[in-house]
Structures are given as C-alpha cells and as structure tokens.
Length: 359
Image 1 (cartoon, helix red, strand yellow):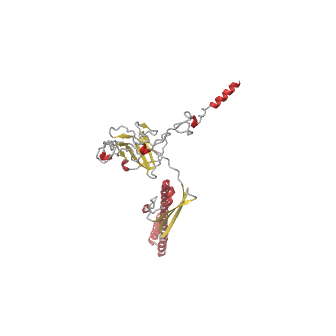
Image 2 (cartoon, rainbow, N blue to C red):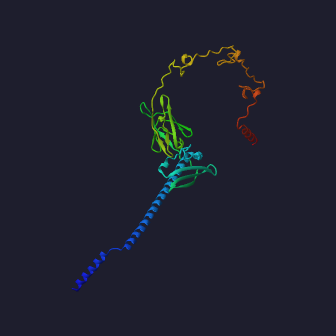
Image 3 (cartoon, helix red, strand yellow):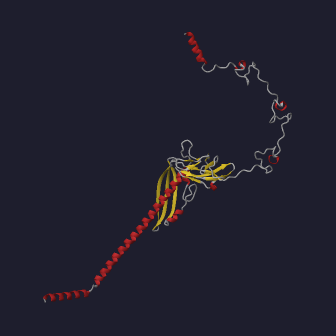
C-alpha cells in the first residue's frame, strides 16, 4: 500500500514538471547559441571553400608550368641551337601556341623567355603564368636550366622491293632517302636475294652499315624515292617516313613495271640511239666534215693529215742532240738521257763480291 502511494506521487510530480516548459530567457539563449554555431560553421565552410579554390588554382598553374617545361624539352631535342627564338605566341621555329590555356580558365597569360647561360651549351628557361584569384592578379615563375641533349640513337630502314609483274624481289633499284630537316641524302640499292636481318625482318635492301650492321639514319622524317629503268618511280605517295630512334623500321613496296618505248624519229626529242645521221628531224643536220685548207684545225685533222691547217709535225728526236725527248730514254739513248741507274741491290752484290775476293 505504501509502495503504491509512492509511485502515484512520483508520476504526479513528473507530469507537472513536463507541463512547465522553457522560459523566455532559455529560448533566447538557445537561439543565440544556434546563431553563433551557425555563423562559425558558415565562416568555416566558406574558408574551406576558398582554400580549396586557391589550392585548385595553384595546382592547375603548377601543372601548366610542368606541361610547358615538357614542351620546351621536347623541342630542344632537335632545335636546341635556335630554341631561344621560341615563345608562346606561335613564333618560329618551335611553333608553340597558347591553345592549351583553354583548359585553365583562370589563367590569363603564359610567357616564355629563353636565354643562353655560360656559352651555347646551357640555357635558362623562364616560364611565367598569371591568373586571377579573388580579384587579385597572381603570378608564378619557374626557372630551369636546359643543357644540350645528347644525340638521339640512330635508326634504320629495311624492306623488300618487289616487281609488279610477277611479285619477285627486284634487284638494282636505287633507293634514296632525304632527311627533311637538313636535306642530307643517303642511298642504297636492292639485292636479288632476300635475307633475314638480325631483328628478324625480311629485306633485300638495308640502310644499316654494310660492315658492322649499325644503324645510321637520324631519327625524324625522311623522304624516299626509288628508281629503276622501265619502272615507275616510287615516292610513297609523297608521304615522309618517320624513322624511330634505335629501331629497325620496315617499308616493303612494289615497283610498277612501265617499259620505256623505243625512240620515235620525229617526236622532237633526240634520244639514243638516234643521231644526226639516222634522224635529222630530231637531232638536226650533221655538221659538215672538216676541210683541209680552211685555216681551222678541226676535229679529225692533225699535223699528219692536214699540215696546212694544223701545222707541220715536229721532227722526231735525234739521239745525240743533247735533248732527252720522248720516246728517248736511258736504255735507248744514253747520250741524251744519261746512263740508267743500277738495279736495286746491285751495290750490296758488289760489296759481297769484294769480300769474297779477299777471302
């Protein structure tokens, strides 16, 4: 009974407490606390957002500078001596441009300045990037040094030349390669037999060194022209061949048979075996034969056949006149040309004979 009364009084007290509610002061304090916490959160989120934007901008700028440095290094492989003339406005010889800036909307300008340092073997590369950040113009500079790159490994070109009429390997084809950067040329001829190179490629022409097989073509673009009589010239449709460094590049091609027609008298072209005697229409009238007595020593005339034009022939040399003249020599005319020198070893033989005679 006592326990029941205690539980009843407890429930009554709790009911009165829950019905009492919050005072006005408590509500105001709660609202103020919520406002303070909200403001702090907003400022914190705003600061984090701004920090993320700034970090993103700077990461993008660093990435752009790294890409720009790689562009310069790549160009220096073939343009090291003139790379100081390059900029990002598309000037020769590098042809850089600022089209990649579209990938970085906040970047406003990118500049490149290359100067020589300590002679021509070392160059200073300065890349500057400007961008807008919260209404403020920012700039980041990068300075690197560029040394003359080593010569790239040479490459080679091999392949099989075949005839269009039958498909067999064709020998005697003159293959000329011209390096587009320097106009340097190198030639090879195709062979009648096909061999397997050290790299496992079939070839009847090979631009490797004939003695040791080393590659000798500079990496880059080469123009090819293959010629042979009675065949059309092969030029790979005017497309350059890109020789990769340190690789044996393969190009197989077919020479189109095109027999040369015999010359036709009257086509206005004096071609062998046409001559003035066989085709006057193409080669013209033959010049008249030389006439002895016209005062001109012409082809076919000489002192023996026409002294009137070419003069009298000189008298033959006389042995004993004190002049060693052709065909005189020491064996035929010692009086004019002197005695012939002793044969090699004759002095030693004389000395040996002297010693033997004294024994």
